Length: 134
Image 1 (cartoon, rainbow, N blue to C red):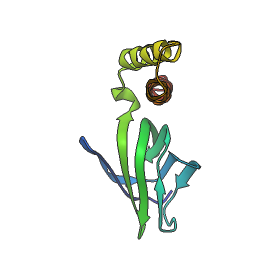
Image 2 (cartoon, helix red, strand yellow):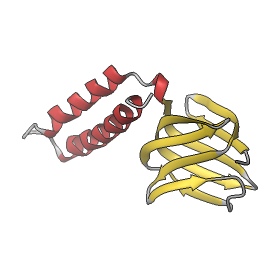
Image 3 (cartoon, one colour):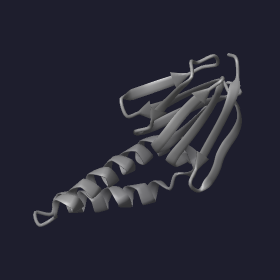
């Protein structure tokens, strides 16, 4: 496959900069696959697994929120959170999952607490899923 320039930048810093052959990420409307020569586009990112093919090898990451940009063949991901599978703390993701479940089962939880717990639950499930495919 033909490589293209990929840059992944989070609020915590640069997660990756270099060449890639393929990127698949979850947008707010579904999965988007990027190959060399992709049309220019901008898309909001949802919560899901990102797959990045570098030197023929697939790497997986939890990619949550942010934006995807393809301009002139260069791809830039600016996610709110981006964690490579081998960097995910599975125990921390499980603890977050359990905290969210506790709030969701609390009959006295406010609507705001429920919405925040649902988002926490979704993030934890994405992280646990990606961590399991290290």
